[in-house]
Amino acid sequence: MIIPDKIKIFAEDVIINKTDLLKRDNSYGVANYRYNEIQIDNTLEKGLEEATFFHEVTHFILNKMNENEVNNEKFVCVFSSLLNQALKGCLK
Image 1: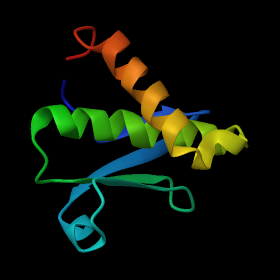
Image 2: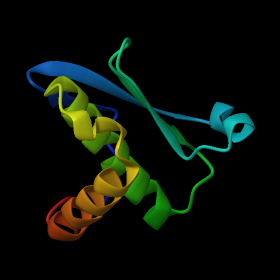
Image 3: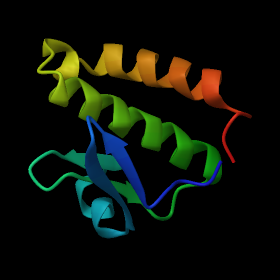
Image 4: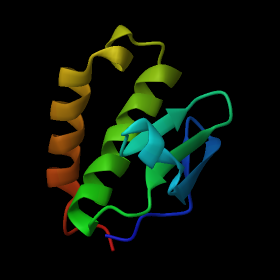
């Protein structure tokens, strides 16, 4: 799957940036709600990059829905993994 440069969530553009700035924080990805941006570590191998993309998108959607689960990493990990699995092969 090719990670897009931009997606829409609730009709708002969310920019996807690949960066090496996350290495210092020991993170694979970050959802920045204030700036409508998702950052993904640009050194990740393809499978981990895809998993990180879906993980951060899940955080973003939950935040926009004002759901308490936004900070529940177990829920986000399981849900994003299932979303990734369901869409694998459907997206280019």
